[in-house]
Structures are given as structure tokens and as C-alpha cells.
Length: 226
Image (cartoon, rainbow, N blue to C red; front, side):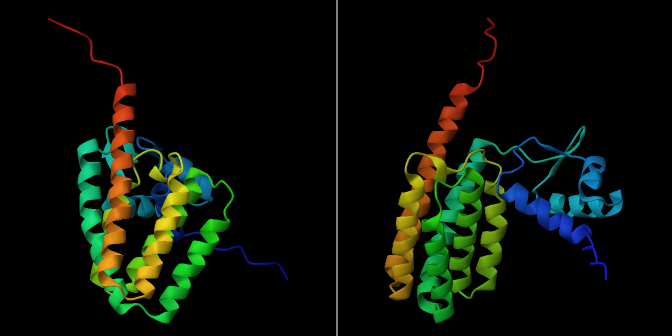
């Protein structure tokens, strides 16, 4: 008996493209065209149009003169997003320390062990695994409103080229910070969990600032005029 081919619909296309944008596969300014995407997924343009519309609603795509593209985010916006994530990640960690269950801890420890086993992961892998770990911390808080806010906010950071986790030895340091956060959550140390989450995100913010400075230096100067 022939094996049935999995049906690709707008939901599946949306999920695939969303994951790719969040993990940095598609860089800022990358166009998203119905025709080429329909060809890629082997479907008509209707489910592609549906997926692109949802991505635009989530602000993962923006409309420009030539169609839809992955948005460009101004440096000031990036820093504002980090500032808000510091506050929310700190709160999530504190609530996780109060509300965590045994299965939550098992999940966090398994994710950390998986990440420690990775051998020189590429930028894409570091982004996706880090997002997965943070989402697991949010889930520990058992606060769906807080999780929803963090999920919405995290989508705004995916447009910043290059992960902070790929700078120098940041990946290994971040995993050590993840381990310290798990320990505080396990001990139900609310203050310790909050402090670790804040330190973790403030370090990421500092590295992002440095990357933004380096990127600004690479931009051509405007022509001089009197």
C-alpha cells in the first residue's frame, strides 16, 4: 500500500517560516514572495498567502514597496526590547522558582544536558536551542499571561543579525548561567533566580550593544557637503 503524502497547508507553512525567521535563517530585508514559496512547498499560492498574512500580523514580516520582507529593526528598538525582556525574564524566573514542578525541572535539566553535548554548534543551532530553554523556564512559572508576553516580545529580537551567543566564549558562559538558573529554581530561591535571570539578560544586552556599535562602524559615511 502506498504511503500517504503529508498534506502541507497554510498552518504548516506558517510554522516553518516562523521558525526560520525566529532562528535567523532569513536575515533582515529578505523578501518573501508567494510564487517562490508556493514552488518551494509544492502548493498553490492560497495557503502561502494565508501564512504570510499571519506572519505579517505577528510583525515577523513587513510590507514594503516590492512586497513583504523580514523587517529591519532600528538599534534603539533592539535595546528597548532587551530592556523589557530583562524585566520579564527576571519576573518569570522568580515565579518559576515558586511554582516549578518536578517535570519542569526534568525538562530544564534535559535541555541543558543536550546543549552541553553540542560540538561547536552553528549560529542557527545556538539561537533555536536557547529559545527552547528560555521557553521552558517561562513554562515553569505556570503563568500563561507572562508566557504570552515573553513569546510576543522574543519575536522582535530575531531580526538582529548574528546571535550574541556566537561572540567569543559566550555560548559556554551562557550554559553555565543556565545551570545556575536551574539550581536556583530547583532550590526555590526566588531572589537567586531573579538575580541570575537579570544578569544573564543584561550580559546579552551588553554584547548586543557592542555588536550594534561594530555594525555602525561598518556602515558607509554619508557624503560630506558644506
